[in-house]
Image (tube, helix red, strand yellow):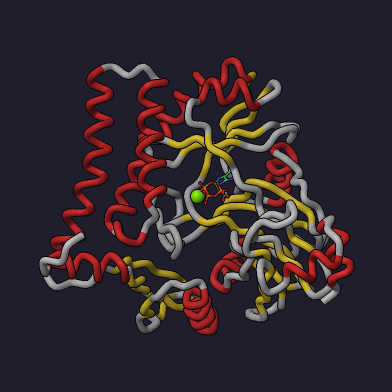
Length: 373
Ligand code: ATP
Ligand code: MG
C-alpha cells in the first residue's frame, strides 16, 4: 500500500494517516481491489474516502445539508444563481476504473458486488478509456435496488443516473454543466436539470417543482451553485418525507429517534413557509398521520398473525457469483438476509431476498405478549 503518496493526496501527514489506521481507517480486502476506507470523517477527509494499493484516492461524496425554510436558506447560502436538479431516491455510488476493472463504491467506501455488476452492464463500453481517473458519482434507483427499492422511476429493474463527476486524487467535483455535458456526450442518463434561477426568484420556482415532484412520488431537489462556489443543498417533498416515515414506522424499533423527528419537523416548516390554507394543512396532517399509523398497524397485525417482520427485495444478476458476493457484502454491512434460490431468467437469475428486521420483530412479539415498553 503506497501510503506516502496517499497521504500527500489527502493533504495529511504520513504519521497522522498511520495513526488513523485500524481506528478510523479500515481495510477491505474483498472483493478486489484491496483498499483502505475512511469509516468516519477525519482530518478534513470525508467519510467513505478510499485509498487503493497504488496510493490512488477516491474522495467520499460530500454530505449535502438540508434547507428547512427554503427562501431564507437560499438567500443566505448562495451568492447569486443556482441550478435545481431532481434528487433521486436510491443509493449513492461512485463508479471508477481500477486496473481496467469498473467498480462501484458505496457511500461507506465498500466495493458493492451487485452495484459493480450493474455499472458494467449499464455504462457504455470504454467510458473510462479516455480518462481512467474519472469518478462517476450518481444514484442507482429502481425496484430492484436492494437498498432502497422504488417503483417510481422508468425502469423495471435498476438504473444509474449521473449527478456529478470527480477525478481520483482530487477533492473537488466538476460541477453541474460539465456533468450534464459529459452525460450527453457519453449517452449516460443524468439527474434531470430542472432549471437555473437567480436566488431571489428560486424559492417560488422550487416550491412549484417540489409540489409536482411530490405528486409523482418523487423525492425532491438538490440545489447547486453552477460555478461550485458553495456546497449543494437539498430539499424534499412532503410525499417523500411521509414515505420515509411510513417505512421507518413499519420497522419502528430499527430506526434512531432522530430519523422520525427530523422528518416530522420538516413538515412543520414546509406548511408554514407555504402559507397553507386550512384545507391544505388538514390534508398534510392526514398524510402525516397516516404515514405513522398505517404501517404500525400493519406490522403489529402481521406479527399477531404469526408472520415474521421482513423486508422483501429482489435483484437480477448475470452470474451467480455476483449473488453470492452480494450475500456476503450484506452480511459484512450488518444486514441479515435470507437469499431465495436463484430463478433462471433471460440473461441471468432473479434472486428474492428477505431482509430480517430483527429488532422490530422481537420487540413487537414481546409487546404483544404483554411486555412493557
Ligand atoms: P448526505 O449525508 O449526503 O445528506 P443522506 O444519506 O442523508 O446523505 P440523502 O438525504 O439522500 O442522503 O441526500 C444526499 C444524497 O442524495 C447524495 O449523497 C446522493 O446520493 C443523492 N442524490 C440524488 N440525486 C442527487 C443529485 N441530483 N445531486 C446530488 N446528489 C443526489
Ligand atoms: Mg438518498
